[in-house]
Image 1 (tube, rainbow, N blue to C red):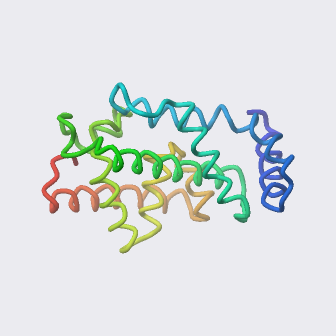
Image 2 (cartoon, rainbow, N blue to C red; image 1 turned 30 degrees about the vertical axis):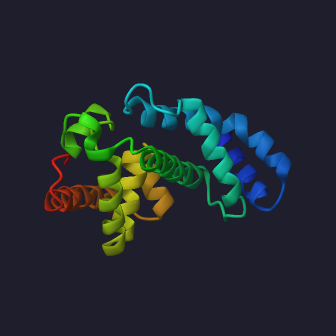
Length: 194
């Protein structure tokens, strides 16, 4: 992405949010490659034979973006954070509807730290992690969003800080505390996944 593109993406997002349908046509080629990278990260951790493929996940996220079109887009990082949330919800919806993750589906259990270190998410039960994230959001919404943006969206500490309008140090601290909280929460629920 060139230096001018982040500003161009932000301008197009704001124009699209204001009702300019042509802005979306101009925006798509600027963000598609990054959306495919995010989707690929998600799909790389899924079991083979998953119902969705990378392109299908991106396409479904685009379809769901139409419900967010009037959102007040802040910038490029905000857009990718919203897309990461949408992709996570799509995969959770698929897992629920097909009972794909029921009781771990025979997958070996690994810790969140191991999963984060390996870049693999298939061994972390999406349903259990989603419930734990929802519980964390009830206690501390910002920490939940940090996990969502960093773990699921692949945003950097800097990008997450930009989206949340907090310092990089706050994001780093929230990230550490959220991981510890999630480990404890999943352990209480009898999950070996974390």
